[in-house]
Length: 342
Image (cartoon, rainbow, N blue to C red; front, top):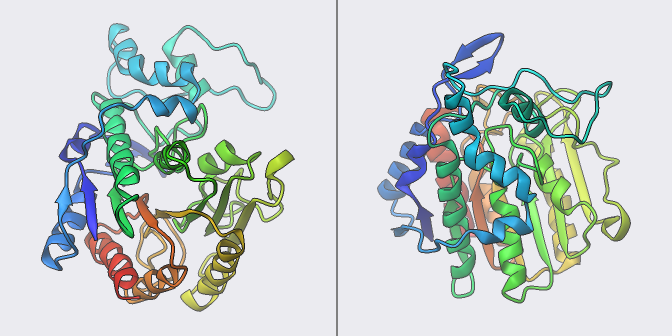
């Protein structure tokens, strides 16, 4: 399997994350990619290729233009005010203060466009996010000739909604890939999100659409980030009614329970019969992941890959989360090897 990967992901290299009441080293950091690339090369998964796509205008089919323009200048606006550290929002348009008027001051802008404040903006953050978009667009274009591909994206994307960032995500890579495939003639796309955290951004983007089916297996939002989306009764609206399926699960969920939900999602995929399958691949379902609570073991990821292969569709894996740094490479490649051998 070919991997598309940009070393320029390092441009996104923030130093702070608000976690447990403290500013800590971010869980989503460049070393994640080093562990994955090393495992890909050691186990000879296949060639690692640089992205070739440079035009990222398709972003505007997924994200609000004003939101993209904000990301383009947020760090510069922060610096112009002489503010120290990294850009972290401190105020939001909360339920009692809900307004569609976008503030002029950077503090207000950050709050307007952020869904959470663990994700700081630093020098190079947006440029790094554009690199991930180039990666996924290159992979989507190659899917016409390949049975499967791995878009090794960093930063991840599935928490980014039409006009909000957070959860380490700025642009929704898998949603951009789906729109790219639609532009190339695909009639129906299925996005299966197997990251531990609900893909709230992907759900938001396609919630009223019937041509792009979204399904997510994740920690119950009553117990896990992003907390406010991902419940089982969220099934789409308007033309999208019935084309959004969530599988929230409880703390301590083992693989034998988790995989029953995967089997059900696979049955939905086969019924939908899409032209291509996009996988939001998060391996933070691993039992030792520091910010998750499922109990999958490394060998379980082989089986995940085999089950996805059984669907027999052109499949694009798009990297999302996974924060048990030492094991992220093993678990990622186990999934991809399981698919190849499935």
